Length: 109
Image (cartoon, rainbow, N blue to C red; front, top):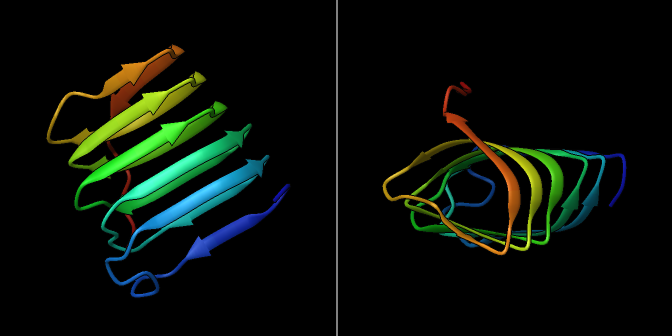
């Protein structure tokens, strides 16, 4: 998808797995609890994820801003990301560069 605004409202995922793939210049808001998340091939976008009960895995993403709440964050093959993170463990970063972390300061009703 390209140049889109995507919003998942509360109670739309209902604790299931969630996947985002192939997004360019998008604003993606996931305002629901989910079991795990996989985010692949996202560029030049903004991604806000609601609470994740386990792992969030971000792969092959670049020039993107993330807001993530999860038990564990994993990054692989990413470049130039800004991440506002709340996690129970330290992030696992593989083959990535120019990653900036900030404290999680996002909320929604």
